[in-house]
Length: 563
Image (cartoon, rainbow, N blue to C red; front, side, top):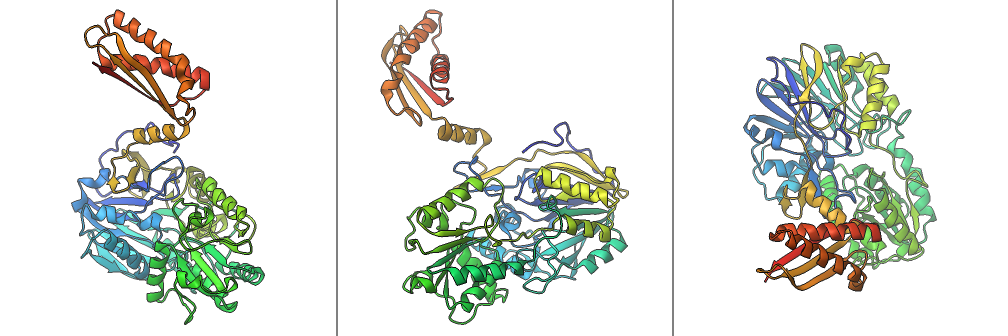
């Protein structure tokens, strides 16, 4: 991630009566959303999400916010507010609660239900959960919270107004202004206007679609497209989407019922989340429509609809395994149709196109956002953001949730509506913003890095180890083993050279063996006895040779053993 404020030092002390905002994720990236608010020596956290790894993070399962900034102050946390149930806003919650289990959780019914299932997986029981709805107002310590309905690509999303003695903050969470939502729940612009009349001192607003002109397309515009896909498909239909996109799944259910097909879920997270949504009434499933995915395979293919995970090309997802022909019970036929009903998250393009090509190679028809309107965004476009700035009339603005380009575009919109340029702040993860006497200013920066989850390990994987993994994957590996006499320093065995990743034939390294011997003999004659120094000598010789001969920079592991 590029650094906007590389010169910033540690933040100064928070002035008495001021409010401090510390973003620990979500500013400069799509995901890992987490913001800490500090007032009167107490803390409030809004969202605690994960970032999904891309091809630059080999072997990484999840990326978490860095809790180090608040780790020794967790006893001062009044509550964790969760704006909605997407993984990039709730996924890291279990990892935070491992460190202090009694942090009160605050969110809507659906959001806390989705979080609850994750907490049970992590064996976290008896957590404190506060279910809130739009219009509710509740205080946690010095933070007076009011919740506002917002429309997003998951039901039950909420914005939150945070009142403190330093002023009011309005945090939109992820939102858009769909005027014809499937569930009839629109973004409450009247509440935004009312809060604006009261006085919003700092506006934190979703930047994801700030570069997109106009208004985001309504979710129901997808229905006619899905209807055509179902009408034209002769075989099985597989639809891949996010496991939390309840509105999209509802439209797939409706289309399946209309065309006389049965539906099955594929993917553990899809099964879990949709069961929760159905139990709570957010997903309406006609009787007899939903059956077990394995039982679905016994029906004629033109009666089957599979709703699957894997729309982002995740290598272990159901869709990726189907594309590779190694799914345990789904095998594609040429007359089948696959719909990728989601957007491309930046960084996932190659993985998604790899899956699309795999599906196409098997003869399936692949429908995706590049060739049909099978996805609409869950985020407000520029026209909607302008509308919000004009009705909220914030005194200060801090764009959040997006890459740097998105936040800059959002900042331009704020300035265009009359917010003074000096009151529109562009920050990134770790940049501290203080609201004092009605004015928001950047106050410094805290160390705030990525925390990698690798299997059951959390935080043990460093950037250095990741770099080694990338080198292994991209450039290859060379090992050199040499045995020297402990008394004379003369070589008694080797050098044995082995490689993986670009030249599997060890004979290809015959010409480098003499230079290795000469370099070791020269070093020994000059008085070098330490095996570590001899290993570095070998590394330099092999590194120069492989760079000039193969134009590669592999990982080189020299081993010098005394005998």
